[in-house]
Length: 130
Ligand SMILES: [Cu+2]
Image: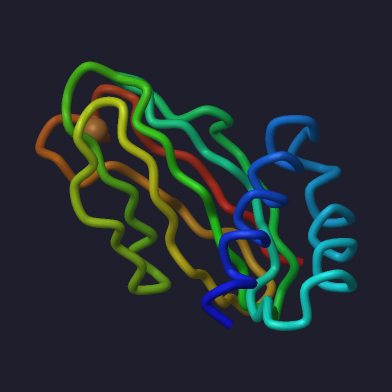
């Protein structure tokens, strides 16, 4: 399993680099066929940029364990929180990467940066599960 996870990660990164948000789902399906040990579907990649998230809207499949990839492209610390789902990434220093796991029933869920003042400055968005 330890051997397979890096390969899945590399494939997921390659898929994310090439695919728009709407296409990532199919890339995840292909990855699953190749890498048996992968338990989470590769979901959208969201960048944290000072005072906003990009993209500000993203979609995931409902009732599915999904990985949302995060990248702080800003010059200050940010985080990624989905209050309604109890998801909190913890702080990301500028230039750092990571991910959070999400499982959701169908619906629209606000995500935001919880660092004081950042949501008010524009760091929020909506994650759609369907
Ligand atoms: Cu922030």
